Every structure is written in structure tokens, then in C-alpha cells.
Length: 518
Image 1 (spheres, one colour):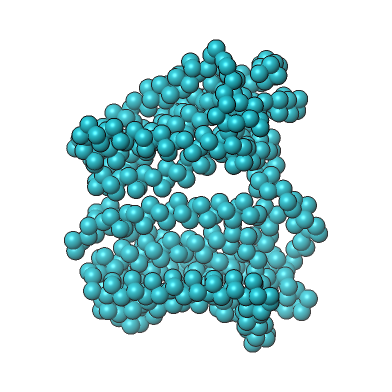
Image 2 (tube, rainbow, N blue to C red):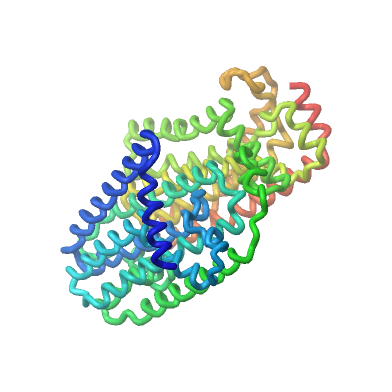
């Protein structure tokens, strides 16, 4: 059976290059990109042959852990279909053990796994150049390949069982954004490091922790063997493979004995964000809000203005002589403050569409939470990329926790106050279809805007103070700023959502009068 499935897998791989010209060209371009990436990996590995073992360990463990995580998360949210889905072999009457073994072995013949093997060979070359024993290197690389393959097969099986109807193009897009959000800070961090023959203490601690987790244990074995003993890493890596193998066999047995619901994949087709979000009032409001934020020019303009406004502040500071390393820390907190402030009047943008929420007796908390989802997604992605970039310009990575704490506090406090402000003190805005720069005449609104902005700053005072203390020299205060910012932000956000939700539930009729009259 294994030989038959291997021949079938090879035919599927070659058949991917057949088809019309456009399809073939896309496949060839994708193959070219993969080859280019592998060439880059081998060139980077060649540069690590001459560095210290600690540096090679840091790079391989961090990069390898990210790769292993990608093999698990990618199939879950990327919308990939397993060509060797065990359910396709149920008609042959084979036992679950034979199906699981045959499909797993046949999975070796795939571009991702072949690329993974090439990466493992490159990493093995690094450790052989460092002087690691050949047997240890081979054992480690086999364990890394098995771990990644089993993680991918397990994720595909879970997706086939419970996630098929939830995967969509929107979810794939979020996966790509997540890769950028995670990869950008890591890349900036590595590029900005001044190694000087040693690994920074913070990174060394992170590597030590990753080496004892299922993600990085197999990648850490050669470096640990050079440093003394790799017993703990080997035990974790072997147990990871055994556990993933047991889960894979159990999932195959479940797949072969579970009937897929007919039509479940078509029932939600074409629903876009509504297919992705939970089937709850808050989920429906979140999906509708995402559509508005991504398509309505009034929302898009607000999103574009935030980074522009934060960048405009930089020029005057530079002109008056403020050092660049301090100016670099200004845009991120301003962006966090403005992102949290964006939702301070979001209810007014609904116009008469608000009747759907009032008529269906949606709970106020569901309305408040659903409307915050787009701001939370966009703001988190923007801050996750900008904070490491700006800290790298500042030059002191010890300030990163403080910067993160200040931004989290300003962002979450702004959203919490905005949840309350948008129902307590809404004011007229441009109507749907009007130019986003065409604002109606109004006699109020400035108070709500100012209260949210100033209130977020005042409530973030603990994180701001600790962040300033860390900036002027007390690096221990940086972690205090992080935890203070997270705690303050979460409390204010929860209070704002609860208060705004309660007011929405009690004053729904009053809010309808407002949107009908503006």
C-alpha cells in the first residue's frame, strides 16, 4: 500500500504542473520563489559556519522554532486541502494504522517537505562546521523533519474535521498578515543586533526556553551537545515526535469513522467575514464592522490619517533639535493613542443601519465588542510592526517592554473610553456615500473627542511614568511599564465595554432618534 500511495503522490506532484498556460506559469513562478528562498537559506547558513557556537545556536533555534510553528499553523488557517486526506482511502478497507503510515510516508514527496529537508541539511552543515558529532547532527535533523511533518499532518487532520467551513480567503489573508506581524519584528531584531562575538542576554534566555519546548528542542540538540549535554533536548524532541505520532494515528482513526456532513462546505460559501466570525450577535457585528472599515472611504481615511498624523509630529521635534534616538520613540505611542480614539464615534457612522441592532434586541456588550474588532486587528498589526522598527532606530532594545506597555495602555484605554463615548455623546458625521472630507455642521462633538484623548493619557499615567523612568536609565522599570500598561488597559477596556453596553441597552430608542435626525 505504501508503494501505491507513493506512486500516487508522485503523480499528483507532477500533475500540478499540467493545465492551461496561466496555471503552469503560476506554478513555475512559485517554484522559482521557493528555489530563491532555499538559495538564501544556504547562503545564510554558509555565513554561520565561522561564527561562535552560541550565535549559531541562537539563529537556528529561533528560526527553527518559527518554521515548526508555521508548519502547524499554516494548514489550520491557510485553507489548504490535504491531497492525501485519509478519508479518500476509506473505500479500500485498509486499517487506520496502514492508512496513517502510508499517507505519512507519501507526504515526504511534497514541495514543503522537500524544502524542509533542504533547510535541515543546511542547518546540519552549520553544526558539522562547528564540530558537532555527525550522529548527533543526523539524529537532530531527522527529529526536526519528523516534528514538522507530524505537526502539519495533525493540523490538516484537525482542519478537515472541524475547521473546513470556517476557512476562507479572509482567514488566509489574516494568516499572511500574521506572518508579516511576527516576522517583521524578529527580522528587525536580528538585523539590528550587534553580536560582537556574543549573544545578548535577553536573546540567550529566550533561546534557552525555546530549546526545552516542542518547537525548538530538536533544533537545539547539536548546539546543546557542543555545550555539554543535550539529554533534556533529546528527551523533549523524542517525546514530541511520539506524542504527535499518537495524535496523528488517533485522528486518522477518527477521520475514517466519521462521516462528513454533506453540503457543509457550501452552506457558508461566499459569506466572507460572516463565515469567519462566530455565529453570535457580537460576531455578526464584528463581520459587518470589518466590511465597513475595509470598504467605506470614511473609515479608510481615518485609518490612513493615523500614521500620517504620528509622522507629522516628528518633523517639528527634529527641527528644534531633539535627538533622533528620542524622536524615534514618539510615533508609536501617538499611533496607539489615535487608534484607540478612532472608535469614539463609530455608532454615528452606522446612520440608520443602527435599527438592525435595536430591533433585534442585541445586547449592548455584543454591540460594543463587535465594533472594536476592526480597530483591534488593524491597530495590533500596525503597532506590532512599528514598535520594533522604532526601537531599533532608538538603539536600546532594553526599552522595548516599556514601549510595548505604554502603547498597549494608550491603545486599550482609548478603546475602552471610545466604547463609552460613542453611545453617551455621539455627534453627526458625513453620511454613507458622502465624501469623507465633507463634515456636517454641528454644535458639539469636540468634548467627546477631547475626553477620550486626554482620558487615555491620564489613565495611562502609570505606564508612562515607568516608561520614562526606564528611558532615563532604570532598565528594570521597563518590565514594570509593560505589566502596568497591560493591566491598566485591560481594566479600562472592560469597564468601557460594560458601561457602554449598559447605556446602549437602556437608551437604544434615544440613539435611534439621534441617527434618524442627523
